[in-house]
Length: 271
Ligand SMILES: [Zn+2]
Image 1 (tube, rainbow, N blue to C red):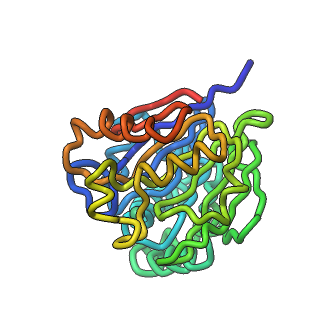
Image 2 (cartoon, rainbow, N blue to C red):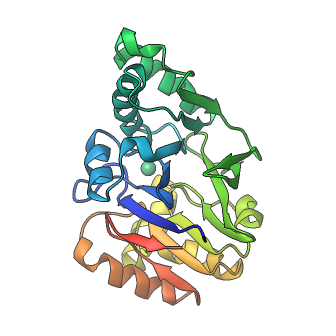
Image 3 (cartoon, protein in one colour):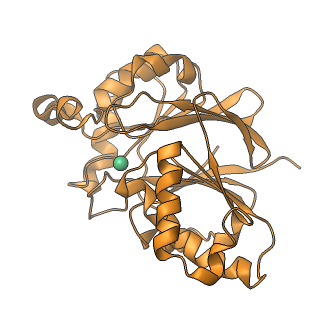
């Protein structure tokens, strides 16, 4: 039977968004889940619940960088799972990947917040693993390659996940994409990228310069140049959410001929 891949978008907003959850998503292969980033708090638990993901279905987590809106949710997941592992309620281990800065922070959070009884589950059942530029791993039984995004604010990594032979889902974090990464996204099936703002407002405000966050125009032009098939825009501002899908899509279409996806929180797409 052919494997079924889908993406559930758990959050679609930027760091301090309050009208939607922080950007993070779940890659689902049949019942197994690969979680990418975890939002900034225990809201992640509600988002997962709403798309019918049980914590024990999560086989792996990747935290892209050491910022509040991406990393803090993971300590809630570790907190709950460490107890379940300790009580032998679940068997299969979970792998948590991140660069050395991310893993150091998670270790610190574990030290501060995980009850002593359950700490022994870390690296026994909850495996913390440092990834570096160009590291290749297998997640959900599929090939994945991590790469350094050469971000400006803090060390940040993206990845190429091969969900089918020669079909790649590419994640490039939440900063302005550096041209160094163009080779990694070339001809990918899906590109998931930061697009803080769109249209003339974006031109005027200039988030690229102010926050190192991308605009729809910027990333759409790169996606066109690199022949990306589907462009997913996320990590956006949260004002005007009801019009976001329409306005971001319209703006992207000015520069990009492929398929544009501007998900709302809790939307799922089939790959
Ligand atoms: Zn962010």
